[in-house]
Length: 129
Image (cartoon, rainbow, N blue to C red; front, side, top):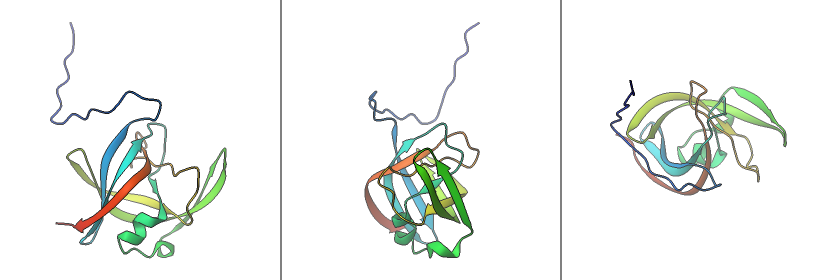
């Protein structure tokens, strides 16, 4: 017997080698930043570019230091609690912000380790509700 899955929200994205881009908003206090993010289903942690923490008014180095290693090398990040909004879903998450910007991009994932993003594109700010 076939199984049918129904969802409240759907998101269409181009079927390209560039990956899946999704609209994402990070919130801290009453500050927020919007950007496009690339879904990475293999990532184990949410790691964002430093510039997003700065837009949110977070002092990056005030968080807990965590080092990550990739095939391209290692980098330092700092842990912070933020609210994440994407595709009609909003949740609180412990994420990491990179100490410095890397030319190869930043890998990120949802708190359960099942999905992730590589941040890119332009940003805008707004007040969080």
